[in-house]
Length: 156
Image (cartoon, rainbow, N blue to C red; front, side):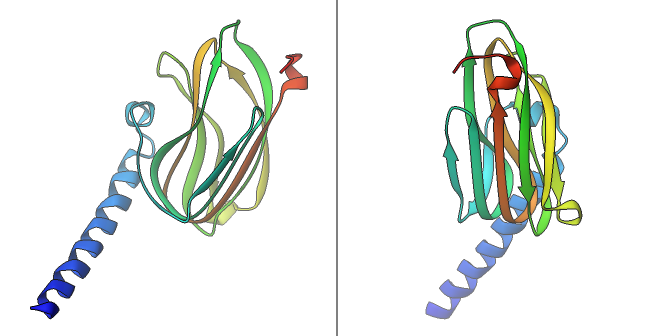
């Protein structure tokens, strides 16, 4: 009986892991799925946020997860985002979603072009802006994004 339980548990884990990566791969480019709620599978995930930084580390990651919600009551403004992004497997991107569900990619990385520094000019929308990590098959993720508020002339 104990052997059957162990085999069933192992089969369930293999099935669950395969499905989690599959949904993440299928929805990686699906704007409506990205803008919708979070859905992810992760191990060893840590996230640190401050007013101008998001730092994420994970042993593995599949899906989409909100990292930071930014509420801007003023007019939209442009800002420079500097992102250091590395991973040893899979593909991941950091996106910004506005109130209307528009998704813009801040930085994107794969194992083939890992350990890069990406500088992007983005628009912080009026209202609510949501930063999300989106990825599939990701291993050893290390992503640090810094928003340069001085570049926008915004006081924080």
